[in-house]
Image (cartoon, rainbow, N blue to C red; front, top):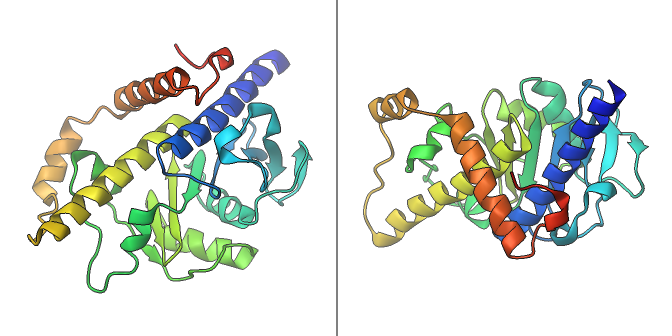
Length: 246
């Protein structure tokens, strides 16, 4: 049993480190932002330190943190916005993984009067329940701030943060990476339509029903995770000796 848990823990560490490096390579993460994911047992989660470079993050450098915010394994200080991850994970037992980033296109949609990010691309069906905007533009450092953000997120899978960034939630680290890629694709499509001077035509409810009818999320997540991991290995972003490629 202990051996199986160690295998799962090691795999999750590699997934978080690989996803973080890939998100940096794709321009979604930079010097700030972080990925967190639950560990089996429901008492702790993985997150990087506040100071380690996202571009060079290694599995062994990740911290194991409990839901009181205590570091129970690892060396280094937690990120300044630990409360964001803590409160979202506590409020959403259906969520396994959380990404906080400062995606420029996401921020842009919190700074345009009368413009709401619509669902343009087929994969944006992921956010058909809504993409709320949290009004607090500051760093989410305090428990009260994290709880407020989690309340704004509610049952949704994404929340914009006024003048600040974006938080995404998903059922796994690979799914989180895929959602981040598609969120940026969708935001880019909306911006491109606005820049052309045309009126955006978001997907209709009928079209979203049609997309959901043929959705194969597990297959799609596996396909894109494989693509980005292999791309990362080929470009030297993800070390080949992590054994991430299937």
